[in-house]
Amino acid sequence: MNASQPSLYWEDGAIVTVDQRVLPHTHRQLRLRTVDETIEAITTLAVRGAPAIGLAGALGVALSAHRHRRPDGTLDEPAVRADAQRLAAARPTAVNLEWAVHRVLARLGEGRQAVLDEALAMLREDAEVGGAMVRRAADLLDELLPDRPLRLLTHCNTGRLATTAVGTALGVILELAARGRVAEVLVDETRPLLQGARLTAWELREAGVPHRVCVDSAAAAAIATGLVDCVLVGADRIAVNGDVANKIGTYGLAVAADRGQVPFLVIAPESTRDPALPTGAGITIEERAATEVTEFAGTPVAPAGTAVFNPAFDVTPGELITAIVSESRVHRPREAAAPPPGTDLPDDGQLAAEVAAMSRALYERDWMPGTSGNISVRSATDPKTALITASGRDKGDLTARDLVAVHAETADPLASDGPRPSAETAIHAAVYRTTDAHAVIHVHAPYATAVAGRWAREMAAPGSGPAPLPLRAFELLKGLGLADPAATHVPVFPNHADVGRIATEVADHLQDRPEAPPALLIADHGITVWGRDLAQARNRLECLEAICRLLLLDTGNWPARPAPTPEGTPA
Image 1 (spheres, helix red, strand yellow):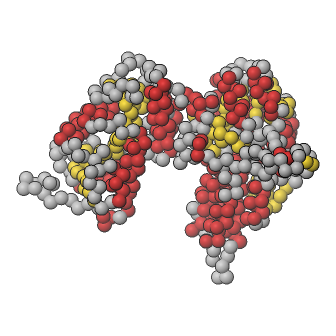
Image 2 (image 1 turned 60 degrees about the horizontal axis):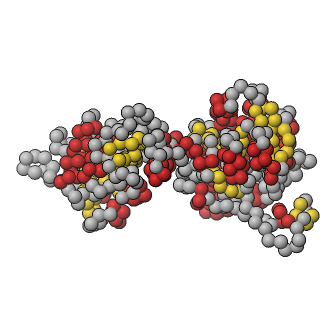
């Protein structure tokens, strides 16, 4: 394969790709001209590797768009959407496929050429993403394991064949080899289809990198006996908490690497992350045909009728992973699962990990951009203590060690060193000392932030305190746990430069109103909610943000400004 030629591309109305089923002995190109041919290529592993099948799926939608024409020449959108649904379901574990199909499908209303243009843009991006990703991972290894050639172990195939140009984990190995940092690569054979022995060994031979094929069942022994400095793998789906689905056998490698204290790195683009998936427990694991195990090259190797367990993937817990490296960041889920300094009690360590995972999930929603927002929870062992996200920390990479222990009702930090709580901790403390809350979430969710700013401007009355936002006749109000879910008033507080002043106003408001809803807005500064635990607080956040979205979309439902009082201010 010419190093300058991608392994998958578009040419004259067809998808052109390398047939990975016949490598390394035969180099054959496939020209896929229909959606059915594309699906067959994906399901039979002629095209494989999470990024590559995503791109094939995107181009498959383009194929469909170019072929489904009504008699009058217009695009048959329902037929294309039906094909897109079939493409997205071709392999259920890899999130890249569904992501890519939905991305190009979003352009369908602009016409068939727009769909193709989007798919071609994704092909170009793949090379850029791959280059940034492998350089970032190679730089990380230069820090973790400096000053010596490395003995690396990899699983399955994660090179150019699994993407279109650069690769993921194997791309990192080739980048390290170019830097003179590779002594040898152990290539897991990767049963039952031998993607390692057939494809990875072939790519390494083409690149001239020293390597040996390793029997899958010998990999743990190789790690234990000191033959491996680092394990590098790819991923097919990554949950918010850092759990990773990858080719079957990855979990066992991670366990061996953890016991052998060998770094275990996952290299995957951001498109492999599933922001809607809290943990790996929700990942659908594809199970392959029994004949992949009971036969070898068409020859039976097991008694006829033997039952087979043949999952294509397994899930590696984030706590076993040293780092997940993408084109834009390094995420360390092992550190995220560790308790913050000073909270060595198991229960509080778990709470801290849950807070960190939730902050990363809300970051993925663009509700905690950059370092903004904060989440807190009362200690499981001492309700007078709260754990809150530290000031100035990127919420997309937050770990359990980025939490600070504070006095729940005064906001005073309980340690003199380490990360510091943000000034907004005072607002959390105001909620804790006036309610029975055990968790508080403050985010910059877009609709709530916009509603708060608009209402504050309409109700502008300097020095008058919070402006009550009337909400009524929303079914979603039930999600706030109100005594009367038919209607409520959510206070909108002025955004004072002095956060302590906001906290004082919040405390005064809640102290006088025990029936107040478990939520408040701050003008142009987001939404704060609370509940008996993190799950309830997040549910209330989702409900109020959805209500604010409806308010902005349905302008006829915008609350009327209350009539002024005799003193001239709104009632």
